[in-house]
Image 1 (cartoon, rainbow, N blue to C red):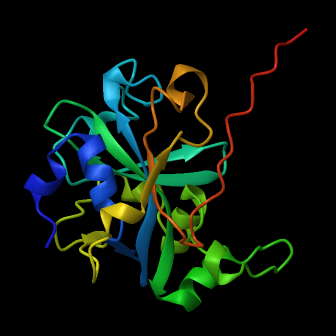
Image 2 (cartoon, rainbow, N blue to C red; image 1 turned 180 degrees about the vertical axis):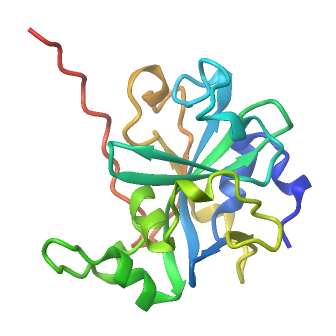
Length: 208
């Protein structure tokens, strides 16, 4: 059982410990293989870097709730709120392996335009794909992950060996927060095919 005390720690402590845990929603279960830590107002890569807003309110605690946001006008991404109340700590769920409900995940992930069905390793490979496979939407913002609700965070069958956990720069983060030397805050399980490819943030284009 995952407890409030387990999540009420800094994101950098919680993130690697979430590898191998399972998130369930909409008839699908995903075993997490890749996550990223975000440390609120002390982290230039965090949505909470400039303080509390209506969008990031749930990040400020208490721990154990789901922070869901919409990005690029089309994608939903999900985070586990952690840390002590008021600190805006969160862990982005970057990628995982679908371990049950594969038919439902494939249905959600099949392209409506082309009918293309993604391969198994791509069902939840990347934060937007993971949220889509689970059927998460903005309606799940603030869901209690430790209660009897529709979104649940559960222990995995086996604890991940720390020796196979790797760290590196966060994906797609611009500016100082994307510096992999200062912020090697992406954690993944080495050798897992569901881990996403690393891509740095595209530079902003200046208008002429």
